[in-house]
Length: 88
Figure (cartoon, helix red, strand yellow):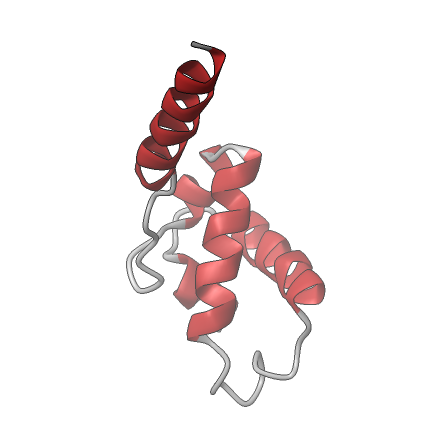
C-alpha cells in the first residue's frame, strides 16, 4: 500500500512539473513582467535571456550572475520597456 502511494506521489510530481515551468519568450518579455515576477519567474527570465544573448558582443561576455545584475539595473532604469530593449 505504501509503495502504491509513493509511486502515485512520484507520478503526480513528474506530471505536474512541466506545468510549473512557464516558457519565457526573450523577445517579448517586459521589464514590468520581470519586476512583478516571483523569484523563480525572475530566474527563468534571466536564464532565457542569458541563453538568447550569447552571440551578442556586449552581453555575451557576461557570466549569468553578472547578467542578472545588469538586467536588474536595466529594468530599474526602463521599467516600461521590453527587457531585451532595456539591455541595449
